[in-house]
Length: 76
Image: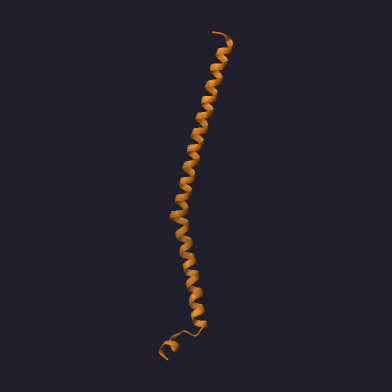
């Protein structure tokens, strides 16, 4: 076997290893993004929604009282 063909075989093996490494890295990246999406949708959105709902209700109640729509308004 000539020396050139051995080098060609080794370089093709290296490129295969590089392609395999890139494929594995891409799979890990995709899995990490999937986990991040799950974290956001399962944990962060409900917590943010709960916080926002409480803030909104406090604002709405304060506005309700400021406009004079308390017990006196309903009972006459």
